[in-house]
Length: 373
View: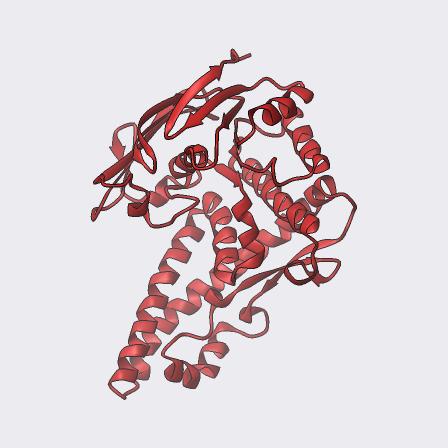
């Protein structure tokens, strides 16, 4: 599977640009702010139905314009599939497959997978639990449609329950029967979500350890610790125990929306005790494990998006990453970098053919083209 071409209209800093892509390695070079990352983000849109960088669709529209459009032709099992994404300020996002609009965006998720490795990934370690839950949910959802539906329904039920708690507090009354209606739904959905997350991590963690050993400088035991209230008690009991607190805080204090993943090296928190090098290896290993998990479960090679990472990694980690590329572990690869000479040397040293593009102020110029083998 690969993306054959990309057409951007009013997307971020692109007015109207078309890019033809190799099914192998595609390198985009240019100064900071030129628009390199925006190309990778456009591919992420066509894969996941949303931006990697900014979840508010309207904020990805080019300045002073009313809409943006991203269109691309995917080649999957030798069949061309046209995917069209359009966002207009104040209107619903539209996704079409071969000119046929999806009834639900969820029907597209997992069809054309992509994995991004970016400097922003450090937020997975440094930021709050919501980001780590979204990362985990995003992987499972690409393979398990029922899980995606469950987390979407859970989010809606949680919002309704919280709104009811707030309304009852404002009117100084508490109606347990009304709360029970939402509790019953939360318990069923939450138990399913909890079980699926545990199942996913049991399979994912050994894959992650393998990639950490490969990309790191020394072998160290790493772990993802799944923290959930449901590990310690039943959801039913947790709901009852938190009734008084919920009424006081006007918020649901028990449930899978409070879950977290703790990243550990040798039994210690990566966030608190991990060196910069350990944290980099940890993040890259997470993404490589994500790639392998999706590849195995979806039966296709996801597109790999490498955003400005060669400047952030030392030589040994770059070398290990290129070893995976040269071993054909990956399929199509899109790379951004500020230094054309550096990126050319990295791939040349690995004896890898690549296409090179120059990006400048929202325009893309192809510098060389490698024929498909």
